[in-house]
Every structure is written in structure tokens, then in C-alpha cells.
Length: 259
Image 1 (cartoon, one colour):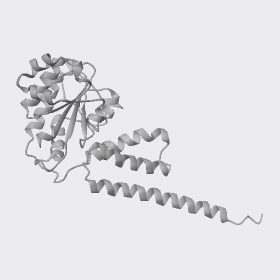
Image 2 (cartoon, rainbow, N blue to C red; image 1 turned 180 degrees about the vertical axis):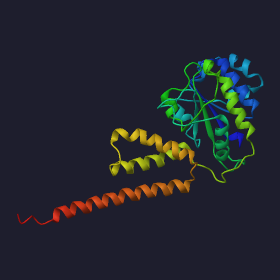
Image 3 (cartoon, rainbow, N blue to C red; image 1 turned 30 degrees about the vertical axis):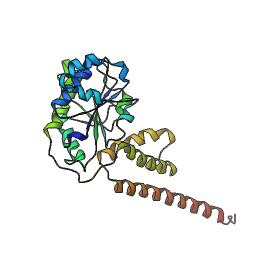
């Protein structure tokens, strides 16, 4: 696990003190990259620094984005944290320790290996919206008592960061996995070709894109693997088109029936 390649993303946090507490939780576990979906001017810097204490440098380096997708585009995958299950809340939710094992295989152990990953946390009151979670490629959940299941934002960050911190020096993939921005290009190639051969209607394309995005991000593809996949689907669509053209020609050259 390369802690320098871990990115914590807060989606529209409301309380400045919580942002400061998140900075401190990250520093406790050697993680220094914070990104926020929102605007810097919406936060009271003094309140942030009061709770951050000696981790204010994390706040000073924080980057701000317009969406979860923008904030995670340069990462190999984005894990959205949620306690709620449902059709739109990801099929499988990883436990923190399971997620940490998976993450260690992606970030690597050396600076020249691996790729960045993101862990996304939602608003303090509402958590991640369905749309924000859909922008993530996997889900993580922290078990808690059903009678009082909601965790404080900084506490949730602390738990996830602790599991990531504890799994340092685990295996490296030996190469640099693709970012989500690059994976999206492969997803477009796949779905464009599937649409050409009539595999799904136009209305089903969004679900298909989300499916491939989740699968390919978890696979931690290399550039060569992505290109190979793209060639497979390009060739499949080309063969399908040629077969269709051949069938059309055959129909046109049939002699009329003697009847």
C-alpha cells in the first residue's frame, strides 16, 4: 500500500469543523491528499484549522471540484462509502478490511508503480446521493449498530484510513493501472460497438456503461489490456456489419419463385 496514492474525497460537506476533523484523521494514518466537491469559500477556515490542529497543511493543499467524477478522474477506481443498500446503491458492498486488501493491489508499494485510488464520503446528513454513488465504481460499508447506524463524517474517514494504514507494504501490481478517465474511453468503445450490433436499445446504454465501468476499474487494467479489449469489440462489430451486408446481398440476388 502506497499511502501517497490514496485520495480522500468529501462530497458537499456542510460543517467546517468536520472538514478539520477529517484532516486530523487523515494525518493520524499518514494520508495527505484531500479533495472536496464544493467551493472553498463555503467553509470557515478558522473553524477548519481549530479541529485540524497540526494537520492544517492538508487543508491548505485541498483541491476543489464540481463533481465526484471530476474529483476521481485520475484515479484507478473510486470507492463510495454508504450504509444503505438498494438497487442503485451498488450490488456488493465491501467491508473496510476487504476494501483495504483490494486497494493495496492497486496503489503498489513504490512510487513508480501502481495508481491512485479514491475513497468518497457523502454529506454529513444525507450521505452520498444515488447520482454521486453511481459516479463511484465500487461501494464500501462500515458495519454499525442498526439502532444508531449513522457515523460522524470524521469517524468514518478515520475507520477507513486506519484499515488502509494498517495494510502497508502489501503486494504491488507491478505496473500502473489505468485511471477512470482512461477507462471511460474503453467503456465508450465497448458500448458504441455493442450499440452498432443492436445488443441493447439506446435507453439501456447508461446502465451498460456503469456496468463496464465498475467491472473494468476493479480489474485494474493496464494500457495494453485496454487496447486489446477495444480491438476485440471493434472487430466484433465489424464482423457483424459485414455479415449483415452479406445477408442483404444474398436476399437481393435470390431468383423469384416459379410460383
